[in-house]
Image (cartoon, rainbow, N blue to C red):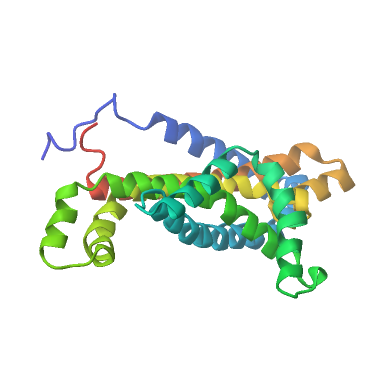
Length: 256
């Protein structure tokens, strides 16, 4: 028991203590200083929009990524090349350009094609669709790598039991691949949360846009962007710790 609880200086998370200390200092300022409290009150209404855009966008990106990932490893030449074209196109264009392209070109074009009025579609669903379209290409590579990490013997075993290719993929390969993909998917969720700040260029009232509007109207730049930093750092730290905990539960850190 004494051996188990012995302090290990080399593996102690000093970085976590430092970040928690910084967050605690920021929180004290927000609670005790009226200028920081006012900035908090002005920014926090955008919190729900930030979380909603991230969750909706990531959920749709998972679907697009899975379809593109399966297409990427498909034996069908047409499907494989369509998936590769999508992935390489998205990965070859900056995220900011893709946001503008999706919101102002792709969505209006799709709206006119299917008989909808462009003005009837608000910018929030456009922004969510843009995030999903962008991250779907990155998640496709995660799905591809996860599926290919499963030994081919598993597929052969499923086929020998009389399962079709689709059944083998759904019942044998994908459940094992998900275990290997989860850490990478978690990292992309954190990345999408941070990249949701780019939605401010589309005038989406998430926390970055609320901060920019408040700072430009009051010229309180220091408290505004300290509060904004506090919010993003808190959210990403919580997600990172949850991801580390889940990795340890899966035993993925045992080799370290």
